[in-house]
Image 1 (cartoon, rainbow over the protein chains, first blue to last red):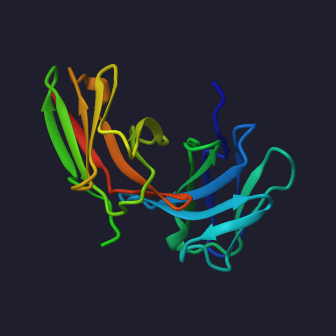
Image 2: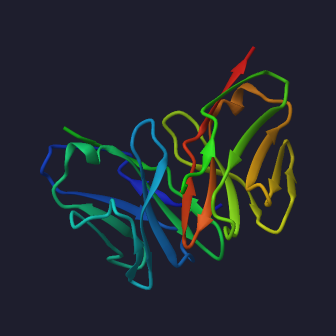
Length: 111
Length: 109
């Protein structure tokens, strides 16, 4: 069964560094998303992406964040200058007609 | 409010039924979801229900939807140790999913 994949599974970085989290959505899906889950808290929407542009973004998704679909398969989330509070699990999701399917997540630890 | 609400903890004896309750906020939500998250793992879509349905059954899982009260429940029959996880109730809102804080299901021997 096709699934969303994410790499790396765990990323450790120093505060102020740039990180890129990678996702490979399900191949025939056209809608892509990033969510995050701070430890012990609920999953929060960050951004949705369709037709090579952002459809919607939350208040969390400030100028430090960007998304890109650099080729036909990858969907990336970049954090330009990481802060301690960016430490979280980041989930990518993709959608066909109605249901979003989530990847296994990347745990980002900012030191 | 804008939150999806659910209780944080539930303890159930192995073999009994578990019922996890949730209230949501957006009456225009098209879909309501239950996701399962095991420790250190991702979000597994367990089941979902279309908003014009009252009930959906899938093997040991039964979802009940009361649209008037905006109340959603998940019943797990014959609860097993492998059901130990956090269960997230979620609603579709525009093109995003809004999650509750999750109910941690603990199985007693």
